[in-house]
Each structure stands twice: as C-alpha cells, then as structure tokens.
Image (cartoon, rainbow, N blue to C red):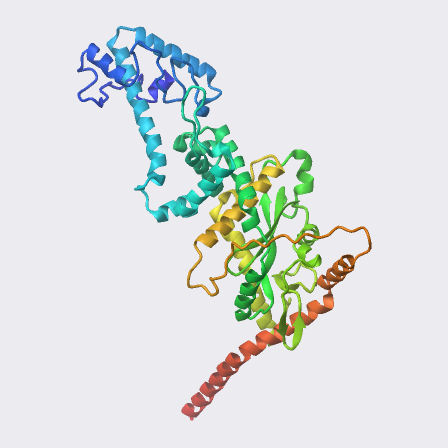
Length: 500
C-alpha cells in the first residue's frame, strides 16, 4: 500500500484522477473501465507483461536491470495485482486504472529524457548540450561511434526474451554524468532508467575504452611539428626554448583501504593520489603520470616519472635555440621552487632584489600558471577528479584520471580558436615508433644514454640558462621601462616649471 500511496492511492484523498480516454474514472461503467485497462495490457486474459513503475512486472515476476535485488517487494506487488484483477469492486478497478496511467507517464518521461538530447530536432540547443555533457554534440557522436566499434558492450542488443536492452546513449550519458558532476552512481537511475550496478559497470567500461582507443593520440609526447609551434608561441612570450610548465596535483582518495592510509597520506592529512602533468599555453596536457601515493613530494614523483625518458634515450625531437649568445640543444619546462636545478627546468628567483630579476620572477611565475590553469579547467569540467574518489581499486582510478585528461584534450582540439596563431599545425599526427635494436655487446647507445642523463641534470647549464633568460627578458622590457621613466621625469620637470 506504500507503493500505491506514491501515486495518490490510500492517502485519504478523493480518487477522481483524470483518465486519458476522457471523463472521470468513477463516472465510467465497470465494463468500459476494464476495456480501457486492456488497452494498456491489464486484465486481457493473457500472461500480463505490463511493466510496473517501480521495476519489473507484477504478474510474471520479471525484474528489470534497474530493479535487481527487489525479489520480496516484486513478489508482494505480483500478489497485489492478482488480487485486484480477481476482485469485483469498482475501487479495485480504479486502483488498477491509476497504476496503468502512472506507468504510461513514467514511460513517456524516460523516453523524453533521452530523445530530447540526441534526436534530429533536439529540444535543447547546442550550448546547453555542451554545458551538460562538457562537449559538443558532434564530439559526443564521435565517441559513440568509436565505443560501439571497440566494445560490443555499448551496442544495444536483445535479451533471451526479445526485449531491447540499454542503448549506448543511456550508458554513455550515465558515465559522462558521473564524470562531469561527480555524483553517485544511483543518482542517474531515474533520469536514464539505469540501475546503480549497471551505471558503475558502464563507467568502468567507458573510461577503459576511452584510454585504449585515444591514448595514443591524445596522451602522446609532442612531435616535431608540435615542438616547432610551441617554440614559436613561447618565444613571443619571452621564453625561447620553453615547451610548457610542469607541476603536480593531489586527488583525495576517500575509500582508500585502511592498511594503505599511512602510505597515501601526505601534507593534506588525508589519503591522496598524485598526478604529474605538463601543460602548454593552450591548456593542452602533454604528459600525465598518475598513481603515486600522496606521501611523496614533487621530487620523488619526478624520479619515478617518464617525462625525460625519450630525451635520455635519444628519441625526442631536437630542440635548438639561442639565448643571449649561448646555444642550447634541449628544451625546458617552467617549474616551481621544489624542483631540482636541472638544465631542463627554469625556476623562479626567490626574494629578488635587482629590477631585472624581479621582472624575470614576475614573468616566469605568470607563464608557469599554464599548468595550474589546466588543473583548474580539468577539475571544473570533470568534478569527479575535484571531489574525493569513491572507488576502491587503483586501476579504476587510473583509468578515470587518464580518460578525463583525454576528453579534456579532445574538447580543446574540438573548440580550438581558428584565429589563434599557428593553428594549421595538426595535433592528430602520431609519431611512428622507432625500433631499437637489442644487443648484448657494449654499444654506443649506452654511452649516449649516460651522457644525456648527465646533461639533463647539469646544474651549470641551469644557472646559465636562468641568467640568459633574465637578460633576455630585461632587454625586451627595457625600452618600455626607459620610455616610462622618461615620461615620468618630463612630467616632474613640467610641474616644477609650472609652480615657478
């Protein structure tokens, strides 16, 4: 009776519910009302397969995917329907009429929720679709095609009874809502008509498929064309040879196992997982290393990371530039004060005194915010990485983080400004892997690797590069400062003559 009260039955109110076929329920004869019920599949003498609003069918005991685990409740509803159908009371027929009407309303509502976004004439405009799904509609359909081609799980199929299962739109919508809003899995059951366990399964398969399909394209290191574009843009910003900025971000792990909490707890006093990333001026994330416990600092993460693996192995594209008369052969990243003094890092100057060093520190700290902005945009688009992680295993969290970064890069590529400089360069070019011959004899590759390893950690080059950048930025800014100083002194002289 509690379920009947949810649709207005048994609550003491007058039962004069409007009927879709016109008139009032009590004003129609019993035979006419039974005929109306037969049009919705109740009381026609056959095996009743009418769907129940709370999941399953009352007569046959079939349980939908969204109502698994409701056996006793489903049995009680089935007994209730059988008792109502066998009764001769007009009130019982009225109860069945209202239940059938409520079921039809829920069906129409579920259908409208899905088709209002994806049909040929959608109800909501494109900017609302982008706000809800964090991406444009063409990009969403591109993901749908790729997922259906990769994993048969996202293809809508019929079960043994011939009933259509969940579509790829429902599964993708549930997964993206969890990623975008960071909500619990059971918060999507009423909207897309999908159960909690199915929503979790769809999320896991979605992120794994996205990582396996698109990681080679959207989680790769920059190739020669990308490096040329990055060098050209960053040279105009005052940092020739810069490839991006590097930093780390912590993701709170709410359901960290108790035995691991000491290992994963760091300065935040809560278990966290660390993401190391490199971002460029357009917030594109070129490098992502995730999964180390939160007790590590940025230096420990750097020692475990593969950010300089290709450079040490000699497989990275060459980066040649000159600053203040000195030639350099390796690109660098802007970093904060905790990173070591390597030739591939340019850090700020703490407590600068001279004017040129103050100017360098101000510009370096402003450009280094690229990676901070990328972290902020990533957390704003996908709230699941902003709030505490609720999954138990690290593999799922790793797939979620990588999938969010891939989708972040895909959105940046899809919405890239056509007026931005050097936009004819293609992000989609994937460098071919260079096979490395295996030899057990002493080879020159080992010596080159050792030399590259030493050059990356050269402190003298780090100091020389920082000094050259200080002079370079000061030379770029000095004419403006000198002109401003000249105007200031001219104003002072003019005021003095005016007072005389």
